[in-house]
Image (tube, rainbow, N blue to C red):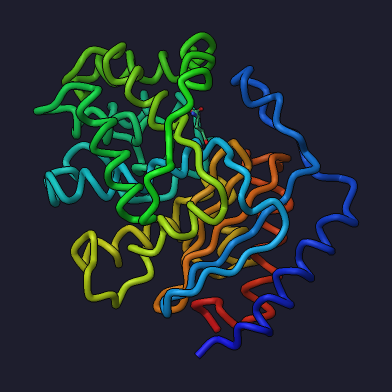
Length: 306
Ligand code: GLU
């Protein structure tokens, strides 16, 4: 059993430590709407397997979850397609940036994993197979609202529009995938859906609650237990792009980052953790968020490597 008083003390200590740090990384500005984020914001929330939610800092302020949405769309795709998905996407770390185009051409249009942008675009294409974009987005919203048991989770259309106006690399990736026969829908249709899924907004409290389906061992699971294992494995190996090895080394937990500065991490059988600090490191992952996850895993003894 987790000692709640101790956990709250650890969370408050992490917020205090973060407040003392002035080098907070760079806020993403390639999506204009994201550049308005305040680098001073910092929130952390933990949703325990036993049901309690503890939080500290700006944990109730909504932020753009961006690539963390790829965890939810992967869960949907695995539920719909099962192993058929792996004919189109790999399961290996890429060792390259999240939006790299290079590897896709070299590897004939089969993205390395479902978390790099090319892979996530294929996953979104796969769930669009028998549905309209608005149906897929409605299903995604249903999924996260049910997972978080919170109806007040929304997509920020301004953020989606902002990325649609500047997402030239993603457009290049989608067209390359189409040229290589690994996109069934038109690039515009897939990207319109992808930009909206990335524009989902949640607070740390909502995100930590939405991540509980990955803790495992729950009776009323949203997805099959073997998919919980598999998604956690992919988060550990690929969830932080070319910074995944460093994150595993420092934190030792499966996790997925987003360029909005959020990180969703899972302490299997114990807790789902969300942390948010908008400044990013060189790999496009939250700088203080990584530090916070490291402190939390260390102080609570939660690393899966012990
Ligand atoms: N929407 C962002 C992009 O496609 C997501 C990237 C991220 O959060 O890592 O560039």
